[in-house]
Length: 595
Image (cartoon, rainbow, N blue to C red; front, side):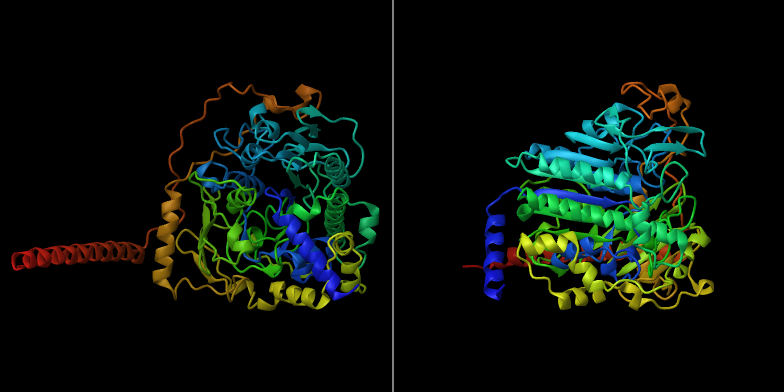
């Protein structure tokens, strides 16, 4: 086909998109996906051609921040608020814990319902299940098809908690348990999404929130449950558990291709915003280890390091020019950004910023800093301002030193990347439906830019900074995304400034309690199904908690900085007052001598 045809077809797409006021929104969340586990980030092990096509034709957000675990990340996404304001910071909600996202919070799907959207959640909820009012269909979703807790077995959809103490089915159609479903979970969720898209009333805008289990480990202590054909597709990976993990990622990527194809079949794709993120980084170590890789980022899920909180993020729409967007973007920004994209306004006080114009019209990003994470039980916090990131508190050294170089080995040659990319479902749909000519040179340029591995410096474990209550760590992420060179001692004024900002956030924290097991949650009491076990109005007394101690000792330098800061502020205020008084005095004198 000629270049003239492609230009004409692209103009038709743009005109059609501009004529529709409310775009459809398909928001896809991966669970524990590693930074280095998508091929547009430079991975030569795991091929993700459908994700890559969205990235190359859409907007890549390389400085996207989430939180360290599922519950805080998801609560921030749906509310636009930092988790510490809601008591959802730190470890995710436990299966037998009476806790949920506070019902006073109004969530993104509720706002979209008010704008006329049909709202659907497929997959993971993870924001409370002890009472019905915590569940998705009571929080703004018209329908829910998936699991309410943190994870389930990929074949039985059962969840086992606390080393087989409690176990039972956690899979629901709205509020009703699903006991007759069969198949691998990723495929089951994908089939449901495709069916929903095919049956959607196209006169109503669609918000489909597809929250995958993959590549999180299974919830039944049979961890990496990968279909045989997807294991074979990753046979070149030498590390056997990582090969299983890679199969879960391959299934996730194929699912995205099927969803894109279904949107094209219904002629919805031209006016659909597609977002792909991960809730946090890979769980490369620990109890729920999935053998994902966050290279070259440091640390794993559940830590304040970049490997946990800086994750894959892509947004695509047919009418938005492709780019690599350099601004800071936080998970709290999705709610105001998507409401703006839907033609609505959000005026309440939240922590998220509306980034829609910044993303689509090249306006400056309104976000200059981000509270990355706070955890009052683990006793650490992290904050970024500009290019600088500070971490304070007590962080587990073993997780702090982790990079995962041992996972990169391949035993036989992999695939020719360009062939894999061009043969994907998404590439086919883009060619045949949107008449997009795939530019391999542009794809190669973006892939090279997104490969942070070229920035890796010194990762000698003996020289890495590990924060304590006496001293934190400071990094310049613009030149050191691997967090290998500590600047704490060489930038004292900046340290003191950022510590004070963290103290201000910490003072507003809604304290967490240690998770406690409620024996009434036992699925054995409910025919081995994880049903809500408390009435919405049933009161459970909980002790009032004091504001936890800030996880860094006060230093002489910090006190001096605070004194100097207040004195300078006072001096500026006094100077301004004197100047305004002098101006007023001169004007009054001038009046005496005016004729």
